[in-house]
Length: 235
Image (tube, rainbow, N blue to C red; front, side):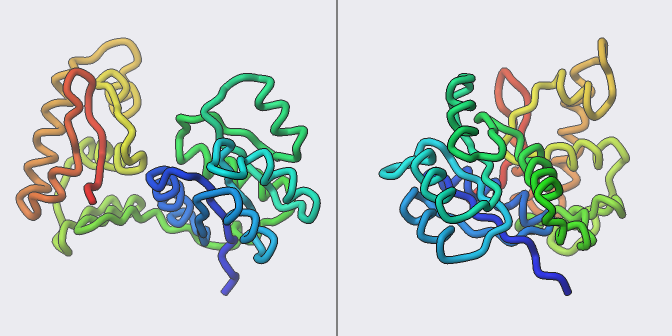
């Protein structure tokens, strides 16, 4: 069996590290974390990573300093994260040796695709040999995307095609808030029209079916008043 490509995620926000880690691990990567620049630098210089996801703003030694020090010893691919979308910041990051640059807030799925694309460009394609399973796992909830099967506490829950599509769409993007218009566009493919009550009705039915087995799982679909919905797994 081929070893999983190892990625280091460096960010001082635990929520972001946890979210990125979840998406990377689902895509077949082994993930380690660091919460500040010094810890990150120590890990990078003492271990082997296929990619480093590095936040720009870190306590103590910031991402720019980490990147500059790493480049004196290693050519490990680096993707920098920042809340600053200024072109000058991006150019400076590239000058320090960053390979890619992602502006917060970002899509975790897009970040995973950028990691894969970067490894492909740099010639590290071990991850391509793994059969990546399309399984979304959360406490008491497992979604088998390819098989279109949902299990709550080990019990299969029968969903309509659109209920399943809606659940998968939100579960693949935890914590992101979706407007009803976005859900109509992306799940129902309504580009210019559509009754927003369709979304509300499907969410209601979905919660009822999940809640019939587990009240906890039904609460993963959260109403964001005045905006729409999000998928959120509580602590």
